[in-house]
Length: 248
Length: 251
Image (cartoon, rainbow over all chains, first blue to last red; front, side, top):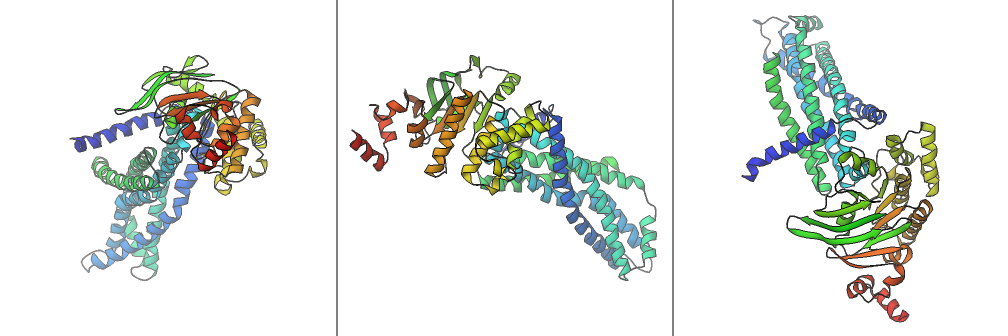
Protein backbone atom coordinates (compact mmCIF):
# COMPACT_ATOMS: atom_id res chain seq x y z
CA UNK A 1 0.00 0.00 0.00
CA UNK A 2 2.82 2.32 0.97
CA UNK A 3 4.56 1.82 -2.38
CA UNK A 4 1.32 2.63 -4.24
CA UNK A 5 0.86 5.84 -2.28
CA UNK A 6 4.52 6.88 -2.54
CA UNK A 7 4.23 8.61 -5.96
CA UNK A 8 1.22 10.54 -4.67
CA UNK A 9 3.10 11.57 -1.54
CA UNK A 10 6.06 12.67 -3.69
CA UNK A 11 3.76 14.64 -5.99
CA UNK A 12 2.15 16.30 -2.96
CA UNK A 13 5.55 17.30 -1.62
CA UNK A 14 6.47 18.64 -5.08
CA UNK A 15 3.32 20.80 -5.11
CA UNK A 16 4.06 22.07 -1.59
CA UNK A 17 7.57 23.01 -2.67
CA UNK A 18 6.24 24.80 -5.77
CA UNK A 19 3.84 26.77 -3.55
CA UNK A 20 6.86 27.95 -1.55
CA UNK A 21 8.83 28.67 -4.72
CA UNK A 22 6.13 30.87 -6.24
CA UNK A 23 5.57 33.01 -3.15
CA UNK A 24 6.43 36.72 -3.20
CA UNK A 25 10.20 37.33 -3.41
CA UNK A 26 11.75 39.19 -0.44
CA UNK A 27 14.21 41.32 -2.37
CA UNK A 28 13.70 41.47 -6.15
CA UNK A 29 17.19 42.88 -6.72
CA UNK A 30 18.78 39.71 -5.31
CA UNK A 31 16.47 37.48 -7.33
CA UNK A 32 17.37 39.39 -10.48
CA UNK A 33 21.07 38.91 -9.73
CA UNK A 34 20.50 35.19 -9.25
CA UNK A 35 18.40 35.03 -12.43
CA UNK A 36 21.19 36.57 -14.53
CA UNK A 37 23.75 34.25 -12.94
CA UNK A 38 21.58 31.18 -13.61
CA UNK A 39 21.01 32.21 -17.22
CA UNK A 40 24.77 32.26 -17.63
CA UNK A 41 25.39 29.01 -15.75
CA UNK A 42 22.48 26.94 -17.05
CA UNK A 43 21.87 28.50 -20.44
CA UNK A 44 24.88 30.26 -21.90
CA UNK A 45 27.23 27.53 -20.69
CA UNK A 46 25.10 24.96 -22.54
CA UNK A 47 25.29 26.68 -25.91
CA UNK A 48 28.49 24.84 -26.90
CA UNK A 49 27.15 21.35 -26.29
CA UNK A 50 23.80 22.20 -27.93
CA UNK A 51 25.51 23.53 -31.07
CA UNK A 52 27.90 20.61 -31.29
CA UNK A 53 25.30 17.88 -30.79
CA UNK A 54 22.80 19.56 -33.11
CA UNK A 55 25.39 20.10 -35.83
CA UNK A 56 26.43 16.44 -35.88
CA UNK A 57 22.90 15.07 -35.51
CA UNK A 58 21.76 17.38 -38.35
CA UNK A 59 24.56 15.99 -40.50
CA UNK A 60 23.78 12.37 -39.56
CA UNK A 61 20.03 12.78 -40.17
CA UNK A 62 20.84 14.22 -43.59
CA UNK A 63 23.11 11.26 -44.47
CA UNK A 64 20.55 8.73 -43.19
CA UNK A 65 17.74 10.32 -45.17
CA UNK A 66 19.85 10.41 -48.30
CA UNK A 67 20.99 6.79 -47.93
CA UNK A 68 17.68 5.26 -46.84
CA UNK A 69 14.93 7.34 -48.45
CA UNK A 70 16.33 8.75 -51.66
CA UNK A 71 15.59 6.67 -54.73
CA UNK A 72 15.01 7.47 -58.41
CA UNK A 73 11.28 7.49 -57.63
CA UNK A 74 11.59 10.09 -54.91
CA UNK A 75 12.09 13.81 -55.56
CA UNK A 76 15.62 15.03 -54.84
CA UNK A 77 14.39 17.52 -52.26
CA UNK A 78 13.08 14.68 -50.00
CA UNK A 79 16.32 14.53 -48.00
CA UNK A 80 16.21 18.22 -47.10
CA UNK A 81 12.48 18.11 -46.43
CA UNK A 82 12.60 15.13 -44.03
CA UNK A 83 15.72 16.47 -42.31
CA UNK A 84 13.91 19.73 -41.63
CA UNK A 85 10.79 18.01 -40.32
CA UNK A 86 12.76 15.77 -37.95
CA UNK A 87 14.85 18.66 -36.63
CA UNK A 88 11.94 21.05 -36.18
CA UNK A 89 9.33 18.66 -34.88
CA UNK A 90 11.25 16.42 -32.51
CA UNK A 91 15.01 16.72 -32.31
CA UNK A 92 15.52 20.39 -31.50
CA UNK A 93 12.79 20.50 -28.87
CA UNK A 94 12.23 17.08 -27.32
CA UNK A 95 15.53 15.26 -27.85
CA UNK A 96 17.57 18.37 -27.11
CA UNK A 97 15.59 18.87 -23.87
CA UNK A 98 16.25 15.24 -22.93
CA UNK A 99 19.96 15.95 -23.38
CA UNK A 100 19.64 19.15 -21.36
CA UNK A 101 17.78 17.24 -18.64
CA UNK A 102 20.99 15.23 -18.27
CA UNK A 103 23.34 18.20 -18.30
CA UNK A 104 21.34 20.95 -16.61
CA UNK A 105 19.01 18.76 -14.50
CA UNK A 106 21.84 16.89 -12.80
CA UNK A 107 23.66 20.19 -12.27
CA UNK A 108 20.63 21.71 -10.52
CA UNK A 109 19.91 18.63 -8.37
CA UNK A 110 23.52 18.19 -7.27
CA UNK A 111 24.07 21.91 -6.60
CA UNK A 112 20.96 22.29 -4.44
CA UNK A 113 21.49 18.85 -2.85
CA UNK A 114 25.04 19.78 -1.85
CA UNK A 115 23.74 23.04 -0.41
CA UNK A 116 21.25 21.02 1.62
CA UNK A 117 23.78 18.55 3.06
CA UNK A 118 26.33 21.27 3.83
CA UNK A 119 23.66 23.25 5.74
CA UNK A 120 23.75 26.22 3.33
CA UNK A 121 19.96 25.94 2.94
CA UNK A 122 19.56 25.84 6.73
CA UNK A 123 21.68 28.99 6.88
CA UNK A 124 19.30 30.72 4.44
CA UNK A 125 16.25 29.55 6.42
CA UNK A 126 17.66 30.81 9.70
CA UNK A 127 18.39 34.21 8.15
CA UNK A 128 14.68 34.36 7.32
CA UNK A 129 15.17 33.89 3.56
CA UNK A 130 12.61 31.78 1.71
CA UNK A 131 15.30 29.35 0.58
CA UNK A 132 13.02 27.42 -1.82
CA UNK A 133 12.04 30.56 -3.68
CA UNK A 134 15.50 32.14 -3.59
CA UNK A 135 17.25 29.06 -4.94
CA UNK A 136 14.66 27.57 -7.27
CA UNK A 137 12.65 30.44 -8.78
CA UNK A 138 15.63 32.07 -10.56
CA UNK A 139 16.59 28.66 -11.99
CA UNK A 140 13.06 28.08 -13.32
CA UNK A 141 12.90 31.58 -14.82
CA UNK A 142 16.40 31.25 -16.28
CA UNK A 143 15.57 27.97 -17.99
CA UNK A 144 12.23 29.28 -19.23
CA UNK A 145 14.21 32.10 -20.85
CA UNK A 146 17.19 30.16 -22.14
CA UNK A 147 15.82 26.81 -23.31
CA UNK A 148 13.69 28.29 -26.12
CA UNK A 149 16.83 30.16 -27.23
CA UNK A 150 18.85 26.94 -27.09
CA UNK A 151 16.16 25.15 -29.08
CA UNK A 152 16.35 27.84 -31.75
CA UNK A 153 20.15 27.55 -31.81
CA UNK A 154 19.76 23.79 -32.12
CA UNK A 155 17.56 24.16 -35.20
CA UNK A 156 20.07 26.47 -36.86
CA UNK A 157 23.04 24.26 -35.95
CA UNK A 158 21.19 21.17 -37.21
CA UNK A 159 20.62 22.84 -40.57
CA UNK A 160 24.28 23.86 -40.52
CA UNK A 161 25.25 20.20 -40.11
CA UNK A 162 23.02 19.23 -43.02
CA UNK A 163 24.64 21.90 -45.20
CA UNK A 164 28.11 20.74 -44.17
CA UNK A 165 27.20 17.29 -45.50
CA UNK A 166 25.79 18.74 -48.69
CA UNK A 167 29.06 20.61 -49.30
CA UNK A 168 30.88 17.31 -48.75
CA UNK A 169 29.14 16.09 -51.90
CA UNK A 170 26.44 13.73 -50.62
CA UNK A 171 23.71 15.93 -52.10
CA UNK A 172 23.75 19.33 -53.71
CA UNK A 173 23.24 22.42 -51.54
CA UNK A 174 20.53 23.52 -53.97
CA UNK A 175 18.55 20.30 -53.47
CA UNK A 176 18.97 20.63 -49.71
CA UNK A 177 17.88 24.27 -49.74
CA UNK A 178 14.85 23.44 -51.85
CA UNK A 179 13.94 20.58 -49.51
CA UNK A 180 14.36 22.72 -46.40
CA UNK A 181 12.05 25.35 -47.89
CA UNK A 182 9.50 22.95 -49.38
CA UNK A 183 6.01 23.22 -47.79
CA UNK A 184 7.51 25.07 -44.85
CA UNK A 185 5.05 25.56 -42.03
CA UNK A 186 6.11 28.29 -39.63
CA UNK A 187 3.89 26.81 -36.91
CA UNK A 188 6.33 23.89 -36.51
CA UNK A 189 8.97 26.32 -35.23
CA UNK A 190 6.52 27.85 -32.78
CA UNK A 191 5.38 24.39 -31.73
CA UNK A 192 8.95 23.46 -30.85
CA UNK A 193 9.40 26.64 -28.87
CA UNK A 194 6.09 26.21 -27.01
CA UNK A 195 7.00 22.62 -26.14
CA UNK A 196 10.40 23.78 -24.91
CA UNK A 197 8.75 26.10 -22.33
CA UNK A 198 7.02 23.10 -20.74
CA UNK A 199 10.18 21.00 -20.87
CA UNK A 200 12.19 23.84 -19.32
CA UNK A 201 9.77 24.02 -16.41
CA UNK A 202 9.93 20.24 -15.93
CA UNK A 203 13.75 20.20 -15.98
CA UNK A 204 14.16 23.08 -13.54
CA UNK A 205 11.38 22.28 -11.07
CA UNK A 206 11.76 18.49 -10.90
CA UNK A 207 15.56 18.61 -10.58
CA UNK A 208 15.32 21.31 -7.94
CA UNK A 209 12.75 19.23 -6.04
CA UNK A 210 15.07 16.23 -5.91
CA UNK A 211 17.99 18.42 -4.82
CA UNK A 212 16.04 20.38 -2.23
CA UNK A 213 14.60 17.29 -0.54
CA UNK A 214 17.90 15.41 -0.17
CA UNK A 215 18.55 13.95 3.26
CA UNK A 216 21.93 12.45 4.13
CA UNK A 217 25.30 12.89 2.49
CA UNK A 218 27.17 12.64 -0.79
CA UNK A 219 25.65 9.27 -1.72
CA UNK A 220 22.14 10.70 -1.43
CA UNK A 221 23.15 13.75 -3.47
CA UNK A 222 24.39 11.42 -6.22
CA UNK A 223 21.15 9.43 -6.05
CA UNK A 224 19.07 12.62 -6.18
CA UNK A 225 21.00 13.72 -9.25
CA UNK A 226 20.34 10.40 -10.99
CA UNK A 227 16.67 10.35 -9.93
CA UNK A 228 16.17 13.86 -11.21
CA UNK A 229 17.53 12.98 -14.67
CA UNK A 230 15.42 9.79 -14.86
CA UNK A 231 12.21 11.51 -13.75
CA UNK A 232 12.79 14.60 -15.90
CA UNK A 233 13.34 12.37 -18.95
CA UNK A 234 10.19 10.36 -18.28
CA UNK A 235 8.10 13.47 -17.70
CA UNK A 236 9.48 15.14 -20.84
CA UNK A 237 8.55 12.07 -22.91
CA UNK A 238 5.03 11.93 -21.43
CA UNK A 239 4.56 15.66 -21.87
CA UNK A 240 5.83 15.38 -25.45
CA UNK A 241 3.00 12.98 -26.31
CA UNK A 242 0.32 15.28 -24.92
CA UNK A 243 1.83 18.47 -26.29
CA UNK A 244 2.32 17.00 -29.76
CA UNK A 245 -1.30 15.84 -29.75
CA UNK A 246 -2.57 19.22 -28.55
CA UNK A 247 -0.38 21.43 -30.73
CA UNK A 248 -0.44 19.43 -34.00
CA UNK B 1 17.28 36.56 26.76
CA UNK B 2 15.90 33.22 25.64
CA UNK B 3 13.82 31.13 28.01
CA UNK B 4 13.02 27.48 27.43
CA UNK B 5 10.01 26.16 29.32
CA UNK B 6 8.99 22.48 29.57
CA UNK B 7 10.37 21.67 26.13
CA UNK B 8 9.79 18.20 24.72
CA UNK B 9 10.73 16.80 21.32
CA UNK B 10 9.92 13.30 20.07
CA UNK B 11 10.70 11.52 16.81
CA UNK B 12 8.08 8.82 16.12
CA UNK B 13 7.78 7.27 19.60
CA UNK B 14 11.28 8.18 20.79
CA UNK B 15 11.60 11.10 23.23
CA UNK B 16 14.77 12.99 22.33
CA UNK B 17 14.24 16.00 24.60
CA UNK B 18 12.41 15.68 27.91
CA UNK B 19 11.27 18.62 29.98
CA UNK B 20 14.05 21.14 29.28
CA UNK B 21 13.79 24.31 31.40
CA UNK B 22 16.53 26.88 31.21
CA UNK B 23 17.31 30.53 30.55
CA UNK B 24 20.00 31.85 28.23
CA UNK B 25 21.08 35.31 29.33
CA UNK B 26 22.24 38.15 27.06
CA UNK B 27 25.86 39.25 27.12
CA UNK B 28 26.94 35.72 28.05
CA UNK B 29 28.09 32.67 26.13
CA UNK B 30 25.59 30.00 27.11
CA UNK B 31 26.90 26.53 26.38
CA UNK B 32 24.91 23.38 25.76
CA UNK B 33 27.14 20.39 26.40
CA UNK B 34 26.59 16.65 26.25
CA UNK B 35 27.73 13.50 24.54
CA UNK B 36 27.03 12.88 20.86
CA UNK B 37 23.40 11.77 20.55
CA UNK B 38 22.39 13.36 23.86
CA UNK B 39 19.98 15.76 22.13
CA UNK B 40 21.92 19.02 22.18
CA UNK B 41 21.74 19.53 18.40
CA UNK B 42 18.01 18.78 18.48
CA UNK B 43 17.62 21.35 21.26
CA UNK B 44 19.52 23.94 19.20
CA UNK B 45 17.43 23.14 16.10
CA UNK B 46 14.22 23.53 18.12
CA UNK B 47 15.39 26.89 19.45
CA UNK B 48 16.18 28.26 15.98
CA UNK B 49 13.05 26.74 14.44
CA UNK B 50 14.65 24.15 12.16
CA UNK B 51 12.63 21.56 14.13
CA UNK B 52 9.22 21.98 15.73
CA UNK B 53 9.12 20.97 19.41
CA UNK B 54 6.48 18.44 20.43
CA UNK B 55 5.44 20.75 23.25
CA UNK B 56 6.79 23.55 25.41
CA UNK B 57 7.69 27.20 25.03
CA UNK B 58 10.69 29.02 23.57
CA UNK B 59 10.56 32.66 24.60
CA UNK B 60 12.72 35.25 22.82
CA UNK B 61 12.55 38.21 25.19
CA UNK B 62 9.05 37.10 26.10
CA UNK B 63 7.92 36.32 22.52
CA UNK B 64 6.89 32.67 22.15
CA UNK B 65 8.60 31.32 19.03
CA UNK B 66 6.52 28.13 18.99
CA UNK B 67 3.15 29.86 18.61
CA UNK B 68 4.34 32.69 16.36
CA UNK B 69 2.92 33.16 12.86
CA UNK B 70 5.16 32.49 9.86
CA UNK B 71 5.61 36.21 9.23
CA UNK B 72 6.52 36.92 12.86
CA UNK B 73 9.05 34.11 12.74
CA UNK B 74 10.59 35.48 9.56
CA UNK B 75 10.96 38.89 11.21
CA UNK B 76 12.43 37.38 14.38
CA UNK B 77 14.90 35.38 12.30
CA UNK B 78 16.42 38.65 11.14
CA UNK B 79 17.53 39.16 14.74
CA UNK B 80 19.36 35.83 14.70
CA UNK B 81 22.80 34.85 13.49
CA UNK B 82 24.03 31.30 13.25
CA UNK B 83 27.41 29.66 12.88
CA UNK B 84 27.16 26.09 11.65
CA UNK B 85 29.46 23.17 12.32
CA UNK B 86 30.41 23.19 8.63
CA UNK B 87 30.48 27.04 8.43
CA UNK B 88 27.80 26.73 5.68
CA UNK B 89 29.25 29.51 3.55
CA UNK B 90 27.80 29.93 0.08
CA UNK B 91 30.33 28.29 -2.25
CA UNK B 92 29.41 30.39 -5.26
CA UNK B 93 30.06 33.69 -3.45
CA UNK B 94 33.31 35.32 -2.41
CA UNK B 95 34.06 35.94 1.27
CA UNK B 96 32.91 39.56 0.96
CA UNK B 97 29.72 38.55 -0.86
CA UNK B 98 28.98 35.97 1.84
CA UNK B 99 29.19 38.61 4.55
CA UNK B 100 27.21 41.07 2.45
CA UNK B 101 24.45 38.55 1.77
CA UNK B 102 22.25 39.23 4.84
CA UNK B 103 22.73 42.97 4.25
CA UNK B 104 21.77 42.59 0.58
CA UNK B 105 18.64 40.69 1.57
CA UNK B 106 17.38 42.66 4.54
CA UNK B 107 19.05 46.03 4.99
CA UNK B 108 18.04 49.30 3.40
CA UNK B 109 21.67 50.41 3.03
CA UNK B 110 23.07 51.36 -0.37
CA UNK B 111 25.83 49.31 -1.98
CA UNK B 112 28.67 51.43 -0.58
CA UNK B 113 27.28 51.21 2.96
CA UNK B 114 26.73 47.46 2.65
CA UNK B 115 30.29 46.95 1.50
CA UNK B 116 31.60 49.14 4.29
CA UNK B 117 29.60 47.22 6.90
CA UNK B 118 30.73 43.85 5.49
CA UNK B 119 34.36 45.00 5.57
CA UNK B 120 33.93 46.17 9.17
CA UNK B 121 32.70 42.69 10.11
CA UNK B 122 35.57 41.05 8.25
CA UNK B 123 38.01 43.38 9.96
CA UNK B 124 36.48 42.39 13.29
CA UNK B 125 37.41 38.75 12.60
CA UNK B 126 40.78 39.74 11.09
CA UNK B 127 39.97 38.52 7.61
CA UNK B 128 39.89 41.66 5.52
CA UNK B 129 42.73 40.41 3.35
CA UNK B 130 40.69 37.35 2.29
CA UNK B 131 37.62 39.28 1.13
CA UNK B 132 38.02 38.42 -2.56
CA UNK B 133 38.69 34.73 -1.98
CA UNK B 134 36.10 31.97 -2.24
CA UNK B 135 35.24 29.60 0.64
CA UNK B 136 37.01 26.73 -1.11
CA UNK B 137 40.26 28.73 -1.13
CA UNK B 138 40.50 29.39 2.61
CA UNK B 139 41.16 27.15 5.64
CA UNK B 140 38.49 25.70 7.95
CA UNK B 141 39.35 28.18 10.70
CA UNK B 142 39.07 31.10 8.30
CA UNK B 143 35.72 29.77 7.07
CA UNK B 144 34.45 29.76 10.65
CA UNK B 145 35.61 33.35 11.07
CA UNK B 146 33.81 34.34 7.87
CA UNK B 147 30.70 32.60 9.24
CA UNK B 148 31.04 34.69 12.41
CA UNK B 149 31.39 37.86 10.32
CA UNK B 150 28.29 36.91 8.32
CA UNK B 151 26.36 36.10 11.49
CA UNK B 152 27.06 39.51 13.05
CA UNK B 153 26.54 41.57 9.88
CA UNK B 154 22.97 42.53 10.79
CA UNK B 155 23.81 43.18 14.48
CA UNK B 156 21.88 40.14 15.74
CA UNK B 157 20.35 39.96 19.21
CA UNK B 158 20.76 36.20 19.30
CA UNK B 159 23.78 34.22 18.11
CA UNK B 160 23.72 30.43 17.73
CA UNK B 161 26.86 28.38 17.28
CA UNK B 162 26.59 24.69 16.47
CA UNK B 163 29.90 23.09 17.41
CA UNK B 164 31.94 25.92 15.89
CA UNK B 165 35.24 24.27 16.88
CA UNK B 166 34.51 21.00 15.19
CA UNK B 167 37.38 19.97 12.92
CA UNK B 168 39.71 22.75 14.08
CA UNK B 169 43.09 22.44 15.80
CA UNK B 170 43.20 23.47 19.50
CA UNK B 171 44.91 26.79 18.82
CA UNK B 172 42.41 27.85 16.15
CA UNK B 173 39.58 26.66 18.42
CA UNK B 174 40.79 29.04 21.11
CA UNK B 175 40.80 31.90 18.58
CA UNK B 176 37.22 31.09 17.54
CA UNK B 177 36.09 30.79 21.18
CA UNK B 178 37.67 34.10 22.10
CA UNK B 179 36.10 35.77 19.09
CA UNK B 180 32.63 34.47 19.92
CA UNK B 181 32.97 35.47 23.56
CA UNK B 182 34.31 38.96 22.76
CA UNK B 183 31.53 39.62 20.24
CA UNK B 184 28.92 38.40 22.72
CA UNK B 185 30.11 40.82 25.39
CA UNK B 186 30.82 43.68 22.97
CA UNK B 187 27.36 43.66 21.35
CA UNK B 188 25.45 42.27 24.36
CA UNK B 189 24.20 39.29 22.33
CA UNK B 190 22.44 36.22 23.72
CA UNK B 191 24.83 33.54 22.49
CA UNK B 192 24.02 29.85 22.64
CA UNK B 193 26.82 27.48 21.74
CA UNK B 194 26.58 23.77 21.28
CA UNK B 195 29.88 22.07 22.07
CA UNK B 196 31.72 19.12 23.53
CA UNK B 197 35.06 20.88 23.45
CA UNK B 198 36.40 21.07 27.01
CA UNK B 199 38.55 24.10 26.21
CA UNK B 200 35.36 26.00 25.34
CA UNK B 201 33.65 24.76 28.50
CA UNK B 202 36.46 25.90 30.75
CA UNK B 203 37.27 29.05 28.79
CA UNK B 204 34.03 30.74 27.81
CA UNK B 205 31.27 28.86 29.64
CA UNK B 206 29.53 31.78 31.33
CA UNK B 207 26.52 29.54 31.67
CA UNK B 208 26.43 25.80 30.96
CA UNK B 209 23.60 23.33 30.57
CA UNK B 210 24.56 19.64 30.48
CA UNK B 211 22.16 17.37 28.56
CA UNK B 212 22.17 13.62 29.09
CA UNK B 213 19.85 11.34 27.13
CA UNK B 214 17.49 14.23 26.46
CA UNK B 215 17.32 15.31 30.12
CA UNK B 216 18.68 18.51 31.55
CA UNK B 217 21.17 16.86 33.91
CA UNK B 218 23.05 19.85 35.29
CA UNK B 219 23.12 23.66 35.05
CA UNK B 220 26.01 25.87 36.19
CA UNK B 221 29.02 27.76 34.88
CA UNK B 222 32.72 27.23 34.14
CA UNK B 223 33.75 27.82 37.75
CA UNK B 224 31.46 25.05 39.00
CA UNK B 225 31.88 22.50 36.26
CA UNK B 226 35.22 21.07 37.42
CA UNK B 227 34.18 20.73 41.04
CA UNK B 228 30.63 19.49 40.52
CA UNK B 229 29.68 16.28 42.30
CA UNK B 230 27.27 15.29 39.51
CA UNK B 231 28.66 11.89 38.48
CA UNK B 232 27.34 12.01 34.90
CA UNK B 233 28.87 15.45 34.36
CA UNK B 234 32.18 14.43 35.91
CA UNK B 235 32.30 11.30 33.73
CA UNK B 236 31.66 13.44 30.66
CA UNK B 237 34.06 16.27 31.49
CA UNK B 238 36.90 14.05 32.64
CA UNK B 239 36.48 11.34 30.04
CA UNK B 240 40.07 11.49 28.79
CA UNK B 241 43.01 10.04 30.74
CA UNK B 242 44.85 13.34 30.54
CA UNK B 243 42.02 15.27 32.17
CA UNK B 244 41.53 12.57 34.81
CA UNK B 245 45.22 12.83 35.75
CA UNK B 246 44.98 16.61 35.79
CA UNK B 247 41.95 16.42 38.06
CA UNK B 248 43.68 14.01 40.47
CA UNK B 249 46.66 16.32 40.60
CA UNK B 250 44.37 19.30 41.15
CA UNK B 251 42.35 17.57 43.89
